Length: 290
Ligand code: GDP
Image (cartoon, rainbow, N blue to C red):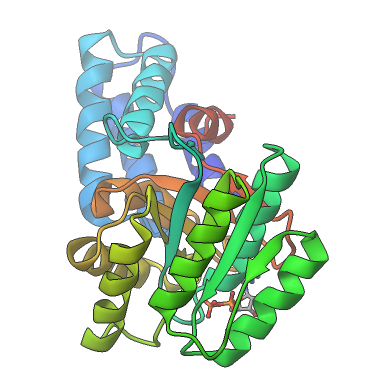
C-alpha cells in the first residue's frame, strides 16, 4: 500500500552508516527529500520533516540507528494530532453518531458501507445507516444494495428532507439501542453554498460525535485543499482517504493530518466492503520503516 514511501525510506537509510559525518547525513536527507517530493508529499511538510530529522540525528550522534530513530519519531509526530482519537472511537454514551461528508464521487457512499461492515464484523457492533444523500437519488439505491449485502439496517425515504430522515433514524437508534449510526450526506462536484448550508442543517439535527471527511486520494493535494474548506465551514474530526489502491503515490497520506489539522482515521483501498483499514500512526510508521 505504501510501496513508494517504504522504498524511499529504505534508500535514505541505506545511505548512512555508523560514525558517518555530516556529509553522509546530508546525502541521506537529500535522498529522503527527493523521494518524498516524488511521492507527492507537500513541500512544506517535507521541509519540516527533513529539518527535524537532521537536528535529531545530529543531537544523538550521526549514525544509522540515530537516523532511523529520528525518522521514526518525526513521522509519528507528523501523523499524530495531539489529543485526537486514532482509528474508530466510541462515544461514552451510545449511539456513536458519525456524519460522513465529502464531495460527490469521492467514495462517500461506498466508504459508509465499508465502515458499517468494519464496525459490524470487527467490533461486533449494532450499526444503523441513514441515507441522507437525497441530492443523488442513485445514492439511496446504492446504499440499499450495500446495506442488504452486508446485512446492516438502513433508514431511507426518498421523499423526506435530509433533516427529517436523520431525525427519524436517530429516534429509531435510541429506541432500538443501536451502537453506531452512520449518516451518508449529500455531496457536490465542487463546494458550494447550498451544499454547506444543507450540511450545517443536518449537522445541527444529528449532533454528531464524529465528522468524517471522505477524500479521494487520487486527487492528491486537491483533496487536502477541499478538506481544509470543509473543516473551516462544517468541521472535521477525522479524514478517510479513499481510492488509495489507485495510482496514489502515498505521500498525500503522510502530510494530510498536519495540513488539514484533523487526523487521518481510515484508508480505503478497493471497491469491496472489507477494503478499509484503520489508520493508527505508530502501526503505519512501523510498516513504513520496514
Ligand atoms: P460518492 O458520490 O462520494 O458517494 O461516491 P461513491 O461511493 O459512489 O464512489 C464513487 C466511485 O468510486 C464508485 O465507483 C466506487 O466503487 C469507487 N470507489 C470508492 N472507494 C474506492 C476505493 O477505495 N478504491 C477504488 N478503486 N474505488 C473506490
